[in-house]
Image 1 (spheres, rainbow, N blue to C red):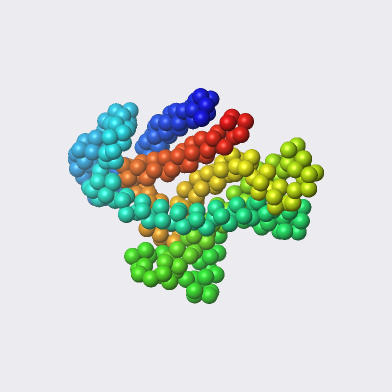
Image 2 (image 1 turned 45 degrees about the vertical axis):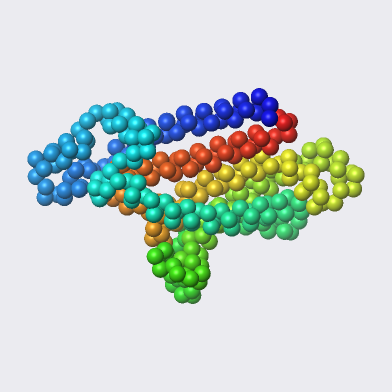
Length: 316
């Protein structure tokens, strides 16, 4: 591995770290702008002004925002996520099980969506201009045009209300058999797979089609290489960088789509926990959940950039 590759990878990591600090600043001050007073919401409207003032002092809400931000940032750097305002429990304890549930949902979705999208994208590029290619293109454009909440709502209406095949809500504590796993995860995974796969298919197809137009691939075609060999042996290895970026971008979108899906299906994940925390103005919990999503997004994008650098034959 040459010095140029190491330098580019180190630059990507440094950019990701700086971005994470900037995002933490934005998350903290965005949550402080939420309407309503945290102390009043926790004590109720019947609380006396003295009680509200005392709680604000105890929670350090009267301290300057920049001091509270620095204290919070130092806590994050040391692994201290803070204490929930609403539950008076460590935020780490509240997030623990919920985070595992979200990871399960994301992992199952990725395990289905990535192979499906890559297969459809590569085969559509392989038979570019055919009826199959046009059908895949129309399907992906149609899915992209529909927001995830509409897909989730339609799934509930079809499979839960009319057909009565699946439950409208996902309760992971009721899982004891493989059939229960299917019932709990079917509709959330189906919705997220539709959302994630469509863009991944289009970006994968575009990357392979662009590589197929290069001179060395055309030379392989003139030498009599079959279409599958042309794509799999010559085009695909050189399109790996853009494809990895396409997968990372689509999976990073999964982090945003899971918020809507968990809310609609009442799935007990970290996104649903963050939505509930907004209602109670539980700032430490909101901030931690938001940072987890941001960290996941930055990790995927940075990993995609580094893999694209490593897979670039010109740099090697």
